[in-house]
Image 1 (cartoon, rainbow, N blue to C red):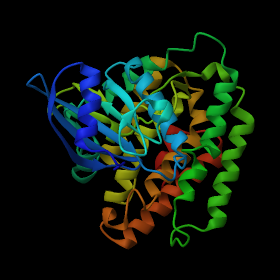
Image 2 (cartoon, rainbow, N blue to C red):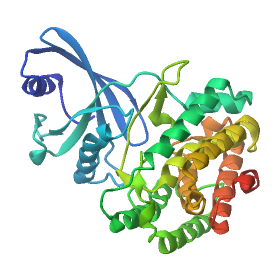
Image 3 (cartoon, rainbow, N blue to C red):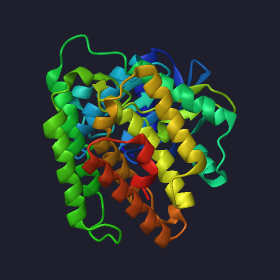
Length: 362
């Protein structure tokens, strides 16, 4: 964690609340792919409060400079509240070199304060569905709910023409801070499931989409930006959910959100069952059918291949999913090969055929 202590936090909170703040305690909750979360407990005039303090790692995924981290957190603080059901951000803070919490203009490091989320992420649900090969009625309701949520969210367009923003979105998909290239840069040098020439081939195929799709600025829409299972928390046994960690951009390409979520049906089915089939396939088809029925946006299928390539490189990344996740090194190797080959087949096909997903990833 960045160098900050309870006393400095207490001084900051007293200024924010203009009240007596006591019993400040910081406890690490855990870490994800880009940062670490801490529980910040304190009393305001004797009343207990809890916020979540989030810090970012200082390398990879475009976070190498302190200004990168500042930009990410400032943007998150600004737009968390602009999307339905998203967790609120309380403030974004800076840390001076002496550890005091100060104004952002003089800061050298940053953290984000946000409300605590309640519920459980969907990673366990995907694993259960793949393992049991059973899609419950609650699973189906949630899939439809989330697909309809994205369909509604993506209807919102920017008020003014933002041609350059869509170009940046497509360009950033291939070579930006959280792009296909950036994810591959995190891979170790020696891999037993893919060659560097094959990875280069995927990048070259992805560049094709940059040159041919960057002028589709009418597709620019309101997006979540990182709609994966870890950022979607449901209260147990209900359809009540909270979204976390909206990242990167307010407006982008709808395919980014859909592929971030649906790649997990493919990934968990392959890792647990060896092929794309059964309940995972049913869930995948239900999500896509629901979305397309509501939006009529069939053009999204021609834009999705490079976004599936990005998400495929994420789930293949041993930094995120070690060999132990797959149960054995051999299963890890085979699953990653199928994921990579499937993503490359999508890219070369130039359009996702939803009836051929099983063939892509065979």
